[in-house]
Length: 461
Image (cartoon, rainbow, N blue to C red; front, top):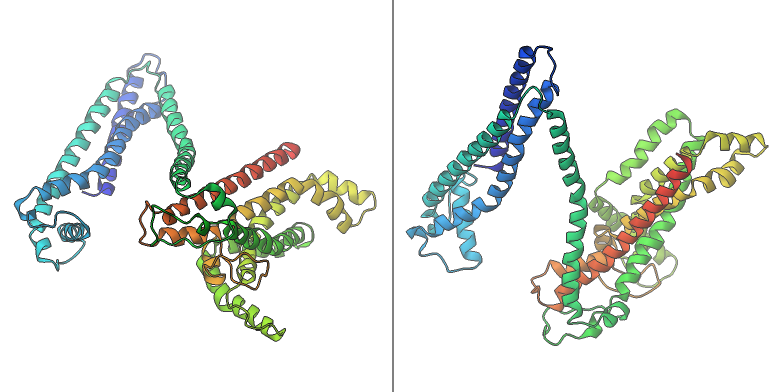
């Protein structure tokens, strides 16, 4: 049985418990001499429902993780599985094919060995589905009965429910923190392994990037793991070229929309501008590769340059800058709009023009929010991959010429992890070292942006 069905079963049992507990609370209220309860009947209902649903959901999560393994073990113990390969990809393919037919996901099998395993899979799935349903019902009955029997006229159900909800909210808030810690720990572990093979000095200060996944992992050439070209490409494309496009256009559009635009124009232009943030990056990549890059190459040829590259950092940076305009524009728009009207009126009353008020009063006052938007946009830009792959190539190149091919850290991470190299090879592990550096840079920018936003809010709230 799929986890979705078990979840529906849990919700149904929770609803039944909710209705039963609410009816019991109303009975307490009718039987009470003064008609008062320590908590409203709704809180009694939610107390029982939560004690049914939450343990069942925990069991469903655990059962969904272990049930497939139990089914496979049961099938492999069947005599029909005796002829399967001992291990490897072929063995797993046969099992997956038989499981797909047994569950109805596929009409038939193509491998004769898989055909013999269809019935054992059906038997095992039926057996463990039954076990899952029985245990689900048993848990729901035990926890629901325990909670139901605790209901009394003086039972503080509201306090109990609020504590449970607070625990749920705390767990939800910890998910992001624990995820960040997990990512950081995994990156640090693999990065330490990589630096045990390649010197950190060669990696952080080397100027040649050319890992060879087929080389001898026991004697890696540290000179081939210099990441300076990747760091430079990331900064050049994402933090220089893209920002040259995004900052002026985003800031000027924010000033126009907040100070000059008619409300009817703003109602149309602002949503249209923010739509740019929802366009998939692969679409931007196609636009950069098929339109912007050829146009830049044709302009270079018209200016007399010989053999300009069809892939360039300029093409990727321009399109990336357009992509992150909404990040700069939205934050600047909100920051300028949050400046107290008294500051604007006071400047105009002193005889300043609208442009002078914007330049000398509004923008300086909104500067913390504008800077925070720029930092968030930089974080978004340096993590971009698809536009760089499609418009700026995958070649590591340490150059200041924007018309030459260039690559970034994220592109090389994808290149190192999508091959067939071993995870014990320094070429593959180098992706984790690159990811660790990028993670720390992005995390630092986000911390700075949040600090700036906090300071801005404290100033004008």
